[in-house]
Amino acid sequence: MTASGLLGEIADVGTDGKRGGYSRHVFDAAERELRTWFVERAQRIGLDIETDSNGNIWAWWGTPGPDAVVTGSHLDSVPGGGAFDGPLGVASALTAVELLQDKGFRPAKPFAIVVFAEEEGGRFGVPCLGSRLVTGTIDVDKARALRDPGGVTFAEAAAKAGLDPERIGPDKESLGRIGRFVELHVEQGRGLIDLGSPVAVGSTVIAHGRWRFSFSGQGNHAGATLITDRHDPMIPAAETVVAARRLAKTLDDARATVGRLVPTPGGTNVIASTVDLWLDARVPGDTRTIKLVDELAEAARAAAESEGCRVEITRESYSDDVVFDQALRRDLGTWLGNPPELPTGAGHDAAILAGFVPSGMLYVRNPTGISHSPEEFAEADDVEQGARALAEVLEKMSA
Ligand code: HGY
Ligand code: MN
Ligand code: MN
Image (cartoon, rainbow, N blue to C red; front, side, top):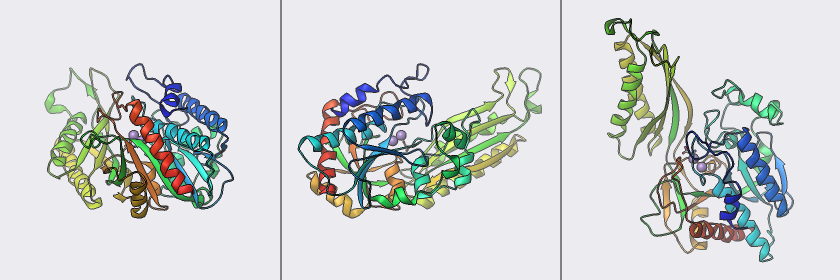
């Protein structure tokens, strides 16, 4: 089946009537439905399914073993996300295997499609949680204790999904089997629009991280409290949001975003007692991301102090700059007739794996240049060219 056809099969799963787009978060009903869809589709083309101790699904074409060629992506979304971010890579992998089977190809190496859990961190707040757990790049106790907005821990959600929370953690066996990994992903910026190419090879992923700023003050009455008597955490929070943009503009190629800000208790006629906001900061160059955050932290503390409030700043996740494996990049380029190479500001499981195995990416053109939004898009023709390109490189990698 074409990758577009496969995406069509899940077009109604996890639609978000309030936000638009899709909200599919690890182990919730929508994501579990996508897992079932993937398993069923993979089994239909003769792949054997294993779910690892961290909730990642591995669909093996033939016997699992070392030096495996692995492709895949994720099925979870951001809140109100698009249809392609994640599922395009999974659907294209299924289509690529079918294209190879239809031409009578059989891999000479172990071969798997992997679906990583919680790539967006949309429920538990840490992006690429599944691949970080496999590679041991997140503290296991911290991971197990991560809480979703409803207070459910990752360990509890994993247990409910049939996993053993005690076995969550580094997975040397799964990681050790990967020989080379390639992830196909919808392009999430404007890179390919201007280059007139449907497909590109990934080159780098810029450093990025998430920090939680918790402002606390004095909850009070909106009408009975004079301005001079207030300690309103919303004020330093708002100043921090604006400061993030101001600082990002001082560093070239820097991005700083506050997309999530939660006042408590959140009443229209109530001065908040606390305000939590999350900063997503991304700057090429590890030290420059940290530099931006340090400067913002200083501004946040000064703003809090002048309002008689306090602020606590916690780093929730961080990934250094990643350069994908040069030899694999060269091979991907050669095999595909040297399409453009693209850097990206988006994080991916391929970038987490890049620290452990030769890892690479293919991007498919997104004519809107918009992602993490219902407007994210890829033309059916480009989608099929992407799936064929993936089949091409997987055949070469598995020969
Ligand atoms: O946030 C990101 O960069 C990715 O979409 N997880
Ligand atoms: Mn994403
Ligand atoms: Mn993604």
